[in-house]
Image (cartoon, rainbow, N blue to C red; front, side, top):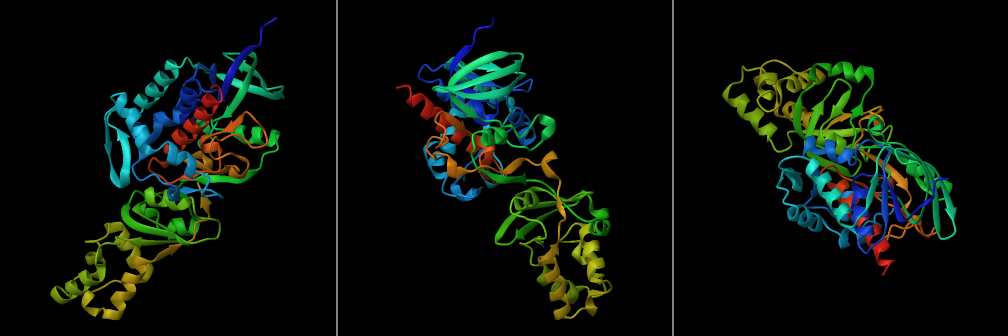
Length: 403
């Protein structure tokens, strides 16, 4: 008969939050096991940032996150900041650089971040079980009993159980709703989940209008309600993508329009007036293409029904053209869903978690960290910072409980 293995802490999920938590939970001698159903740890880390991992953001702060309780994130972010993680990366001699808007990337490879986290785990003797599935979780006296199968099979027990299984985004990488099922088992509330940081899709009629623009990119300010972002937009065969669209998708809801201002820092009106004065026989669409991508200028001309010599356009008519360029409004019919979403919005309600420790208030020893929680960051390294901060918070709480 196989002997039941006993651990102080079991962490389900070897992603960013789970690996970070393991390195700290075992810091004071605790026996830690990380369980992962994939063949390798840190798959989202590996593919992020085009293979260079946008591992944090210099501007990470509570206002860059969405949650039903926006105050929940403050404790973890304040106690383990982007600067703390940068210090860790630097200590491991990983070269990095800043791109736009405070985004930090590895100079070389995202695999360096995974290697760093595994090295930190190894320092404290934490174990990693890959290709292992959790079939059952049973609360017991002073902890939990788990039935697992796969590369590591049998019964295992622990005092502390940490759910770091992520959300539903990118199912082909193994994403499931496992963490939400655990929450339901223990009667913990869940905020409705939906795809976040995801391309928007449109009706066949709208797509037909701008199908020729697939692949066209342009600087924009995009808004939905009070939320707005200033980054690039990309036209696709299905709709709109690019950084600005991914950002606004987290705020967009069905039946809401999105408004786009193209080339917001160009004085388009003045450019048109000068062109009218200097070369009035030129076509207005040709002049617009000096400021906008050619296909976009042509599309706007068709939509407005404008063409011909710019000399024939009054100031009022020019202003109408500019107003449309500054406030192009479209109604998405949906998103591409979890298939391409970078994150999952919603999740385990923060109302049932301790913001300092990430422990469930009604279930001692049960913790939820990372994407599975109702905390979602903007595009640009914010979600990784939440993984580091929440993983650290839970790990610290577990380690301190041993002192």
